[in-house]
Amino acid sequence: MSYATQRFGFGAALMMSSALAINPVHRPASTYEAWLTGAMPLELRGASAEFGTVPGSPEPFVITLGATSEQGAVVFTRWDGRAPAPGTYTITAEPVPGGIQALIVTGPPTRPTGVFRAEGGSLVVTRSNGRGISARFQMQAMGFTADAPEQEDRKVSVRGAFTATPSR
Image 1 (tube, rainbow, N blue to C red):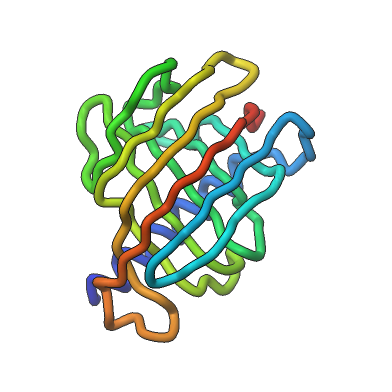
Image 2 (cartoon, rainbow, N blue to C red):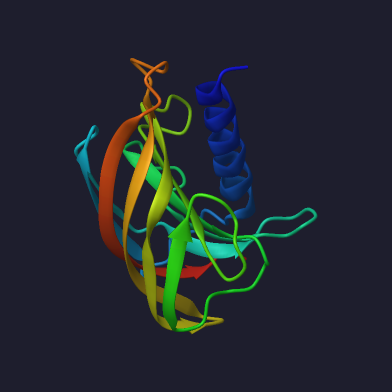
């Protein structure tokens, strides 16, 4: 199995588990926007920004921006299962204590056009409680596009902000 296939499989599984854990009810207080530059210039925005834990063991804490969007989605994962408190968090490629991982999937969930895993950046949480999480982020990611999956070194820079609501 190629590295691209493994990374796409991880992304698709995470997106699928995140989408299944999220209640699709529209919540007007929820909003997100993200701008991608580089290999896949794109603007993502919408009203589906939610957070919660994914059932299973271990139970990661996930923030999903646009899980069912036709344009794409951003997924933040904190593997210790805890919601981030206000503060600055490092976005890393590998899980580290206190860190956050991020995945960017472009295109619709049923037919992605690109998958990019964040290699570095930061998530600045400005508000966090049981009713909502507000934050801004910037990150650099590497991955591939669906039209050239063998080129796994495509780079994007991503910046954005969100206000997310609980998924349950």
